[in-house]
Length: 327
Image (tube, rainbow, N blue to C red; front, side, top):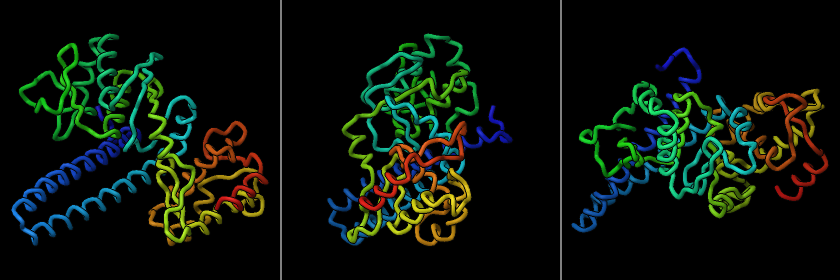
């Protein structure tokens, strides 16, 4: 049962709400696209223009929803998520949109997959093999009940079978969902069953991942701004501000009086500047994703025994040279 006084439960509810909202707007977009095709066939130009404008605006709203979702994850789970992502063989992203899985490791066993839905189906089959009562527990748990869609059911007369796949034991599994929704659903099922998120590991298609995870790319025609990869929430930031944040890390002893850096203190120090010069609502969202990038690039590491909140610079000169030559 959902405990509304439990932060973890609230986080799951909100993250699921973001996913449902994203899917509902995408459904709206699909309907409009069908309407646009009909308007083209009927040569109704004025109506078509209005339809296309609505489509464009809805896509902008989707981008904003993704930004807000990523900011929410950063301020609530940012550094915790980073710890999950330390496995070099498998991938961990805050946002799985546009990715293609090729392998999943579940309870230490590896399976080749082609689609995100394969992961959910494998999970349901394996849980049933382990204990048939687990599936019944999942179906009873109110954390897992969909709002409009039914995620899992044995009652085929209540669903549109086109959007479901049937397991070997007769359970209908909703598979017509996006990557984030399917991943979150898998994690929710694992937790209901008494397992942990770490029991499910995913490997993405290397070619798609390499295309997506370009270190840093220019995001404007005048080369004055940069964009981080999706793994780092696709943070878009002007180069001068990016340099200011990096230099603050380099000059940590003067600015903060410590040998290590704390993302929240950097965010506090440069909050007004970050909020003024970026599209983001929270400065910490920007800083923690830059820190994640620097950790993955081996410029930063965890400070001493600290696993959260504090980082050291591995080599100041290397960071300075990289900044001078690449940004």
